Amino acid sequence: MLRRLLAAVSLVSLAACAGDVPWNNPNLPRKMAEHDYTQCRRYADSQTGSGSGGGYFDDQRSSDPMGMADRAVSRREFDALISACMRDKGYFPKK
Image 1 (cartoon, rainbow, N blue to C red):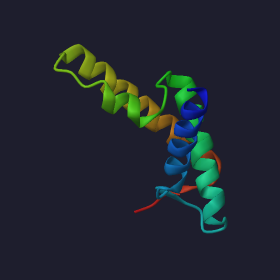
Image 2 (image 1 turned 135 degrees about the horizontal axis):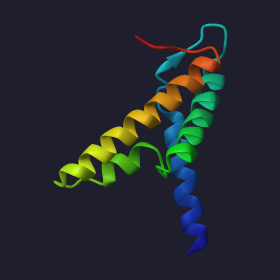
Image 3 (image 1 turned 90 degrees about the horizontal axis):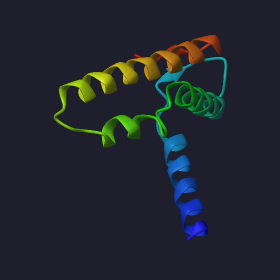
Image 4 (image 1 turned 120 degrees about the vertical axis):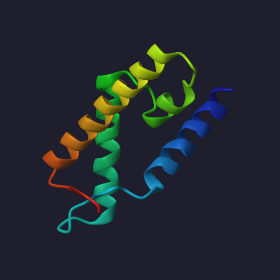
């Protein structure tokens, strides 16, 4: 059971890293951008308590207006932390 869980976590991590990074620094290789983006997402996760980043916000859907508002605020905080982290590392948003 533990091996399956670790395998699943590894696959999810690889899939997240393989996606297109919405940030660019023409002076750094793409692999570095992927690494930095993953680090910034982990930092944002740790600061917001959102667990697995975007999944937390998507999996918690309900019609509760207060829950929806809380998730929207949490998502903005999560995105702002990633943005600040990536900008600190010298990246700019892709257009």
